[in-house]
Length: 274
Image (tube, rainbow, N blue to C red; front, side, top):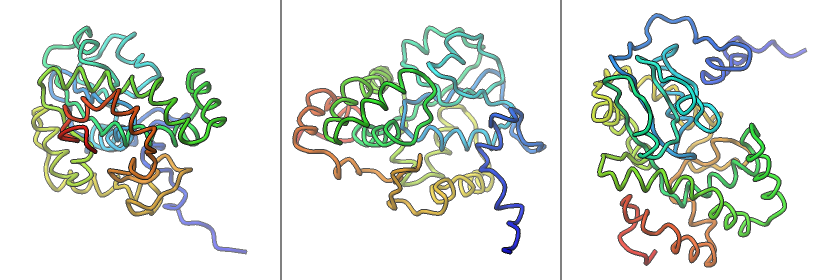
């Protein structure tokens, strides 16, 4: 008989332990950060490092975080509570402006290159994402019947536009918008800046360093380094520029016609000659 696994190997990852189906309460700790007056929002679009940021916020704020819900029900259909942290809020600038927010509410906005967003979504929706609603079920059913090129073209038309609207409205607003690619290159510096410039919070550098270490790509992916691909994992590859391995001339042409202006607005390209 083999030896019994030790306790640490049996523990669930922090994200699943904190808000799994069996236990909705945060782990019993006394070192969670207090939320300042008002409410804190992490605004983003899908496939822009949402679950990574979520893990960080849950680690820092524990019971104060509000879990995301399908179709943003947690902010669009329910009263928004003061002194809470709303994470993975997928809303455009007009939608955010329409919310009734507690006084002192602050937010930061995080976006991603829409080309990598598309590739990440393709593998996630086709294979790994939990099917939580009929729309997701429809997309998965269609993607499993199409080849990769046709599937990417399909998602570019029916899904990516949702991310594009969020990006466009925030970029048009002139507000500071952060990029996931900068988090990949310098997680500590970029996350610190998001908290400071977006929320007016200065994080203790040692605390931030320890939290980021607990939620590195290697930890979240089960030990893989960035660039090592596992198409069956929610944390598939973790690199910028992977779209170049999947864009065909047909995909590139259609993408440029639909979204090239957003690449320019986000600082991802200088012109259409990419």
